[in-house]
Length: 589
Image (cartoon, rainbow, N blue to C red; front, side, top):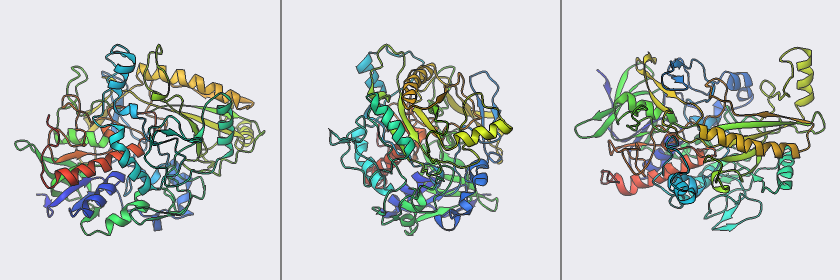
């Protein structure tokens, strides 16, 4: 018999950025909310303090802030019919665990999506015609537009203290910013980060080829700043310990710094840690969620009744939990029917190293997660795709995030993998190499999806989620075309040699690429092709909502956090103003 808790208005599954936003907004509006986080409590003091937090072996190599795959993991395969095998250690992506989730160990690279991404199918049809893409590219409109989200993007900018240079302010292109971004109603709340020498070299070469370089928008705060919740953020120290680490300086926009102090001060909100949600309880006859069941720190099964349930877990966990709970029709790749698990997408990443062989002093150890210079001429809405055979794109940037000694040893192709010559090469190239990354989009394919694997179970006896994914032909074409353009910039930088990391023919779950998983519980205007409506409310239960990148119908050529935050504020606004005082479907199927 499960322990039964007192009912609450809203149960939030997860304790990361989206749960923190909703917990704060709902509690402020007078509703009781509890966030159920599988991991431990973490705060800037004492958990993120140096020198402990600067332990590269513990956090960068052994993933101390990440989820434990021995408790729950995924099985993986590239295509339908291939045997799926469990991912026994983290590799390609790194879901966070503990209060704050992935927004503790993220880099702070903070991008708004171009307006075209939100109505991608309509935009492609209007611009290139109905037959530009084949049926294997299952892109679709989101059901919400950039203009509708813009006020929520702007508020999220202020909460997170984002720094940058506006490129499009109320429709007027601004010098020094990104000229390809959607129009902003207000400037960034803070100035951009300082320019690194690597960023200067990249920007100089890009400008010589006619591109418009600009500073990467940053959630690494650039000056003392107080946000709308009264949280005080401090300026970044450029210590080079952002990704995979918590920030001891109160300088990176994590929930512990920006949101949770205000949320936890409200008696209506509770963060309940060591609470591992195993299923959503669902009344099939009434078509409503009645609460969630979880395993607590003592190993007891606990039922948390709630008038409303919101999934705020990492992207693939939202879909897996719905599948394990039997809510919604699972996607079937053979018939291409069903919705839960549909349109899983990722990011398409390539990179180039420019080696100056000691001719430049880059000082990579003077880094920050979003310290970079970028160009956006190759993102989806920035260039003409006619005759190219693909849709999508991405931005190109020279980031200087880290010179940490274990992982930072850029080496030219052909360098011995060990021994004296390897050591000499590391010494020669450590301080004189610039890395350029192409951060590309990912379109959905009918064979890429999230399902359940009945062969393997997690620590609680439930079937594991099964990820089926390979790079679509569309994305391979896109990556090869744009990486070729990046090679031209790399050559213009004047280094002694370059090495190019072309996209592999097939996706591998082993090497780290990016933690930008998306899709599986996608949004849209049709319950036959989406899990949630434009407000992120599920079609199958009006009191079950889903947050995060799992609602993206396809992934843009940008980092997802800004759009995740904007969508969460958009959904919170609908919950408070339209739903909670009159629970019902906000959009008719």
